[in-house]
Amino acid sequence: MKKVCKFIDNVSEWGGRTARWLSLVMILVVVFEVFMRYVLNAPTPWGYEVALFSGAALYALGYSYAERHRSHVRVDVFYIHMPPRMRALADTIGGFIYFLPTIAFVAYASFDRMLWSWKIHEKSVEGFWYPPLYPLRTVIFIGWTLLLLQGLVTLTRSVYHAVKGRSL
Image (cartoon, rainbow, N blue to C red; front, side, top):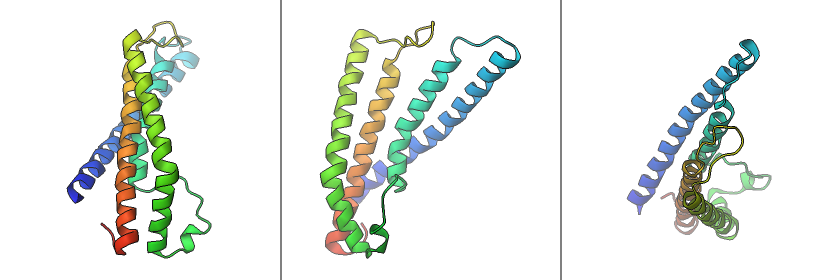
């Protein structure tokens, strides 16, 4: 079990490192586009969509990384005052009631959307160069799937801690 959890943790770390590079790509594209548009008065036909796609992929691949490092937003007015075992129990209940059903549904919906996008060879109509959307839809599905897997790891650790009183 520890090996599977560690493997998923490593995949989430990879997603975070990839998202970090995508943020650099997005920033460079936006800076280049602003320079071309406002300094040279020659906007690129691709800048907006490349920045948009980079940002979408950045978010999608960053989901599991954020879950891995427990940095998603939480309302913790009571949570921070609980002992560790009680926190693990709260995480377990929340994971089963809210996290798993919601993320499983979104992952399934993104899978369906990804398949449809590949089937029709969906293209973006935001600009006039019509880049394909199906690779981005695939990355988004991968992001939700990685979040689901990392959430299962987090839930497994919470259950273990709630039952055994120590970390997995």
